[in-house]
Length: 634
Image (cartoon, rainbow, N blue to C red):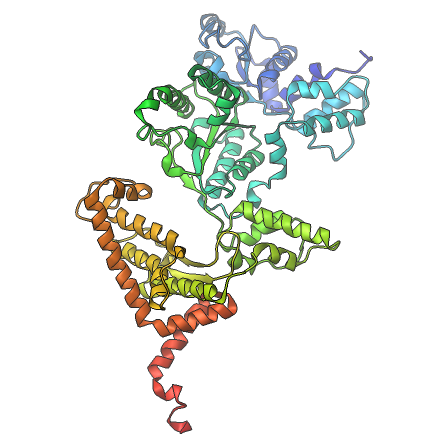
């Protein structure tokens, strides 16, 4: 070893430990008699160097270090008697572990006078190690290098006798070679820059705030944090991006797994699947505090709907997962400091035991972004392209698109500009957003009548406040009517729900009233209407009985099982359809005015929609005189 220089495996532990303490804590650590100290390492690899650092910084009667490598042969309570005698005799003791609640005796954890959570090394710690090994400080601007590398990655990159620049270059290569998940995190925006996630985004921000408060000691127990959730939503709504952004903003390691991965990595036999699951959960526990992301969690079957033929196979797997989640949510000393997030496209397909409070707690839906969020999402993906260009008008045009579709628009627009050998123009983006409209005039007229009929029924029944009516085609829709519940109301009466059903059926009614046959454009409308009608009787207790026979999302499944229920819903839908036909017939002239305007402008916002209705009603009040020029005009 070069004289005066210190190898990183000897210096890193001391620098990390000192950085985790205030000067007052450091004095107590070194000199306080009868002190019991618990050092929580960031990963198993840091346990040994932190043990050596503690031994070199102060005198101890006993040092206990456990990194979990012998966890199958050694229980947490092993050696508890000896450690208790050391403490009882008034001696100084330090215990080091990356998972103290899981690996150390409970009495040692509870009796700690000082608990030091080191966290991963900061840039300042890494810079000191480089100085010790090379004799020179690294250049400024290198603060992010190596911040998430583990102990042996750092030791391999920082070499005695090397120069600081070479160490930084090796750290940069090591950082670039990190896992796919970590690379993905580097490209996602931080949580505060994400748009359009609604309730899920608010939950994520609270989680990050709580994790940071826990690090500062303001929240003493990690288990009290609301940290277990399922994100559910259609493909492309950004569930994985949100999880990666949480990891980036919180600074927690992200471990991703899925049931499919357990099968792919194993043989598919029951014992192999369980071993793969156990290995993943152990990896997450070893990395704690960390985030465990269970992707496509609907692959864990709902035991209520699993056939008897498959139940015996799945029961041990589901039971093992539930047992693991019970351990995570527990406030007992054996619990883990883990955030558990599941993701699925089918939130209503999950086993109720999986998402009950205390396990994955609840399901938060992530829907396609609304009109206000879309410009912000576009701006994220466009980067410096179209800087200074107002994107606000695009929200109404693009409503219904998922985050993945929006990202595709930005890529497509960038390609158009690149092929044309010029900077991107707003026309490039609009060309991607607006699918070529090859519909015939008759098809466009039908679409306009359909969407206007929805809007007019919503306005007349008060089921929602119309915000946008559009027949601009995009890759996901040919037309849409966007509305919001009045006054932010969240509860609904039976009359409210019936008005929503009438509104859903009004598009089909408009086509019929204007002499066109009902079309497949009403497919999703019928789905909505049927689910709502079934929920009145089977979910909301608004029919003849109070028994909740199905959750709202599954109420319509009773139609296949109960002939009487099917007849009841059919009669209800026919009555609501007749009401929709009656509204459109009564206001046929107004529908025609609105539809012609929509064909001309392709989109009408809520303000213009209500102005057109007000103008039409004023003409009706003024009567024939206005239409014929009035008495003063002869």
